[in-house]
Amino acid sequence: AEDAYIHASVEDQGPGVSDAMASALFTRFARGDDRPGQAGLGLYFCRITVEQWGGQIGYRPAAGGGACFWFRVPRPAQGLTLNVKR
Image (cartoon, rainbow, N blue to C red; front, side, top):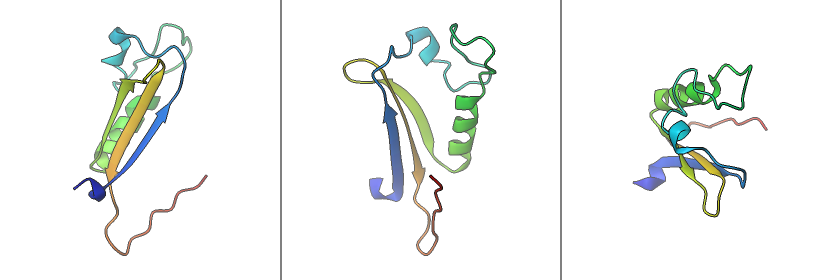
């Protein structure tokens, strides 16, 4: 069943995300205290896009410190191509 999904994750070795912030990361207007001038919409837009595609998105602390953001979306049906620009 896992082959039916495309999985992606990004990890860093930064300071991570506080427990208080982790529960609100993907909500509208959520932003860290050290981010003045930011709208707090980036991860919210990521969440609604991934969910619209039938997927899931999340966060977990990275092993050894830092943050790991991940998402999974259903694979395109046979015969469809997924164009990704880099």
